[in-house]
Structure formats: structure tokens, C-alpha cells
Amino acid sequence: AVMGGVFLAAERYYLDLSAEDAAAGIELQRENLAGWLTRFRALPSVHARHPALLNMLDTPADTQLRDQVNRLLESWTFATGAAETYLLGPDGRVLASSDWLDPVTILGRDMGRRAHYVEAMEGRLGRWFEVDAATGERGYHFSFPVWRGTDVAGVVVVTADVAGIEEELRLSPDEFFV
Image (tube, rainbow, N blue to C red; front, side):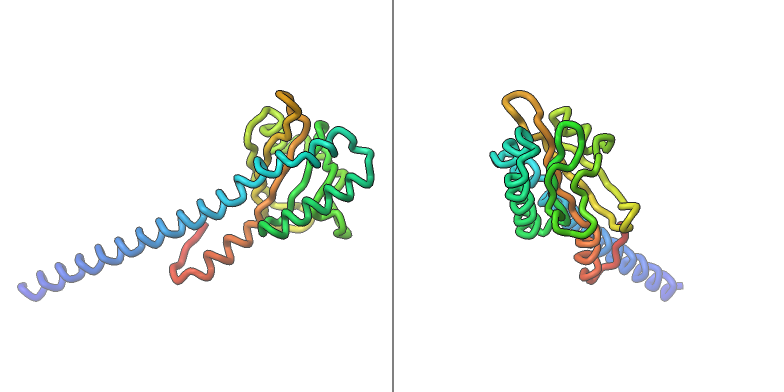
């Protein structure tokens, strides 16, 4: 009977210790995920202040300016590790995009019905998770209005590739599911 009590006490102790370790691992992964999303969440509001974006929204037919803005978005995307960065006009169409040289670009695509566009056009940070029907890639989109005075002139969007955070989570010694 004494051995049974010692065994039960030891079992309880090690189960509690395992539960504490698991809780600490989950909290660490939660903080990693929150930090990863926060990194991309801030980018559209920073990008929206660049004067070239407002110039593009004011003169969308200027092809030389469009090329300049495409290159700018491409450089931002590369520098930040985002999957994609693009500029939407007031009608929801993609005016410029970091993928401008890709064979299958989103230039000209109508995104006017998407939640992240609608929220940004209302003057707020927009968010939207998507599984691209064409590629199967999963992305989390953050958007922010490009202001002309007190009016929203357009929307800038930064897409975070969900595979990036999954890769970071896979490298963790703890098993974790999102």
C-alpha cells in the first residue's frame, strides 16, 4: 500500500511537471506566432505613407510611374520577407504589385469585394486569410488606407506567407499545431 502511494505521488508529480512544460511551450509558440503576425501587420501603415503610392493613385495611367512603384513594392517585399505587396485603387483593382514580373501576376485583378480591402477603404487596418484557389498557397493579408488628406485614396496590402511561420514552428523542438 505504501509503494502504491509513493508511485501515485511520483506519477502526479511528473504529470504536473509535464503539464507545466507543455504550457510553457504553448506560450512560447503563441508569442512566436503573435510576433510573426505583428511584424507584417505594421508594414502596410508604414508603406502607405510613401508619396509614390499616392502619386500612382492620382495618375494610374502613368506607365513609367507604375514600373517605379512595382519595383518599389518588389524591393519592400524582398527586404521584409513578405510574400507579396500590392496597391489597390479606389475601385479595388490592383494597380501595382511586387509580383509584376511573374508570369501569373495579380496586376489588374479585382479585389474590391475582399474584407481587407473594404476595411481599409473604411479607414481601418484590414485583415484577411486566404487560400489562393489557383496556387493553393495560404496567405494572411494586412491592408491599410493610403490617405489623400482626410479621404482614402486607395489601399496598400502586405501578404504574409503562412508557410513561413509553419516552417519556423517545425524547427521548434516542441510539437505544436495551428
